[in-house]
Length: 88
Image 1 (cartoon, rainbow, N blue to C red):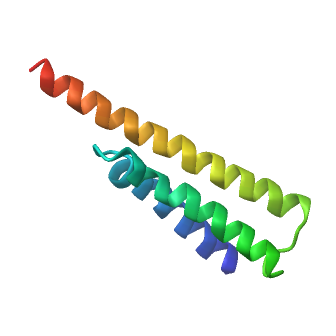
Image 2: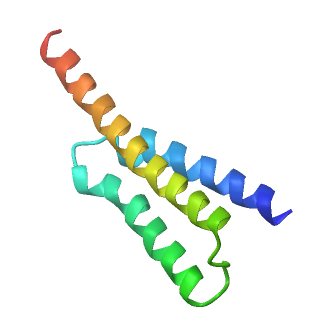
């Protein structure tokens, strides 16, 4: 059950990252979720709430990488919206 909750919250945060936080004129706003994810994962590992094993490290690296990728995609969406507005 905990795994399903993690997946649902992860997908929701990545969608929020791409279409809301990364898709605006404030570039720094999109950095909130990736940096919070890094802090959360490091905190979980330091307090032993998340085991320090290969699977969890791979899962953490994939999630943080996806956060930064979605931030970039959201920024690209905003840039494309601005370019389209200029050429209209």
